[in-house]
Length: 628
Figure 1 (spheres, rainbow, N blue to C red):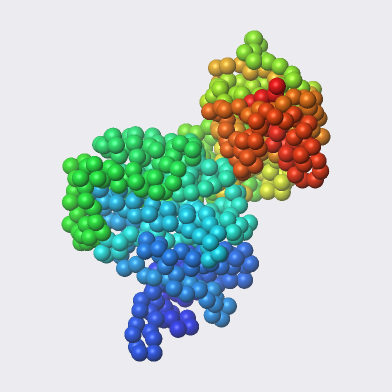
Figure 2 (spheres, rainbow, N blue to C red):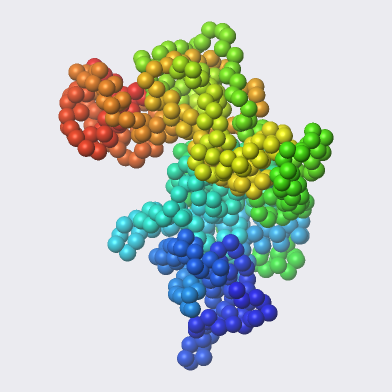
């Protein structure tokens, strides 16, 4: 790596003159390029870090980014001029945006105790959304839609030139449908900045362009507030705020925002992707409509003049000044919190060396950061205590008569809140629903505990689990915090493995051939527990997609002579199950002319038969099709 003391340095025909930044995968240089006539151009060189140049995964990621960037040609997207390799070092030459990034602009405003004017903040967001709309709808050289999702929108990736031009950069973790490398595109990949993720990113759910809509909503909120939207003492709490779309800080500090502006933010920051702006263009149009109605004509020149004022220290200070203490936007947590976390990490590491010697008195005084913010713990590793079962159930039945598919679809469609108890011989499971979504799940099956689940999936070793269990008292019984404190998992990995574990606990119920259920409306979980809040319809779809052929075929043949007619419903719709276009296409063809058996004969063998059986089963059991 070229240290500042070794510069200038030559890289092929480029002369590296200044190192601008170093990231986790690449280093960024300011460089010059001169042609044979001596005409010189200043560019940016992004070069993969030397120690990663021999790592296939990182090389693939870097090449993927370059392949994508050279296909994006838009005035509001940072342009790639060249991609190459010199002496085994991969690099990209990109246009230089003479100016600052949005983070630097917000920091400059903070130093002057000033806020970015509302019209300018909205203008910047509108420009970014223009770039995103282009990226989301871009097509490849063969005309195939690329379906790009940026996934890493943050103030540091938004560049503002001295003349007020706004450009979006750093598509390094973008997902492209045509190139779905596991190194970069899988939902469980740990990438992106925690405080700028969307709720579905946190739990590893399928992603589309609405992830970027949410992220621009975050950035716009921070430009208007002059402070972080999702801020907490540690990363797990930040992720919890994101997953819940907790806008408490927007409520607290955004009281002076005009109602129409707040409405724009609220729409962009909806927890459910379906409730957000459907596209970046729709978000942009809402902003432009507000600017038009309020007679604000904002141009690049206006932004450029404001930037010049701020950088010179002469920015106008509004009556409601931004408070400097919380305004500096830097990473997922504050510097103080990171310092506390470092202290805690050293303490836990020391304790891990001799867990058996940890005394109660030691645990009671474990130093700062053990519980840096009030938050319910992840499920305990203690034996599951199934809830009290006294009282008459509001809904009860046999899982042979009412399948788990029908039961979960009903509870979700009716937006039920309460306790669902499931029994199958010695196996008992409980699910607390809030607004039709599973919030807390417990099981008396030892192998379904989080620790054993992580061992079974080779995420941690049995020895590491023993250390975790010994150290947990220092974290008030919170296995997630313990895993992070020991450095065994990063915060986002804890969230996603927990979500995966809960999905598997519930999916197991769908495979039961017998059992019973009881649902008690209004019952809430009184134990300390980390809420999972998963999409019930997505869980149903994923579970049915894994059911064995004999299970679904047997159920369908019981009603083989009945004709199948689609049913129009508000919830669910075929798309709610997130299984692609297949359920919707079959649902549209269910006009009551054919029986179940006739449908099954349509595709009698192979994978098509299996898909047909599962899809028809899903539609019938969820109430989207009726039998006559």
